[in-house]
Image (cartoon, rainbow, N blue to C red; front, side, top):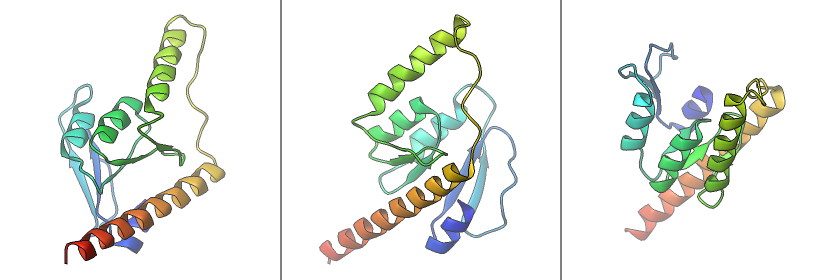
Length: 142
């Protein structure tokens, strides 16, 4: 993510409730929020706006960001869309219920090389699209 941000001169804001080491770069900023459930998610959802890309695997956060016309990308390269987020939320609730009943255990599979490749390709694709959209908006405004 950091390398892609440098290549495209896009700013990256890492939001967490504890310090996370990030590269020293004019394009990367780390925001540490208070501890608590969904505090980081709330910070992101309140501040994101069209033209931003939110990277998250948190489906409720993805839904909140999509409502604000923000592009949302999962960490394994799957982009969330407004027309499919309802299914993702329902699947999440079902999985949570199955875990609580002890029927389903474990979490997602670990990240693999193909996931990283898919993620980087999709991130690049999104940034190209946003770059074109922004350029078109600037040209239309002239």
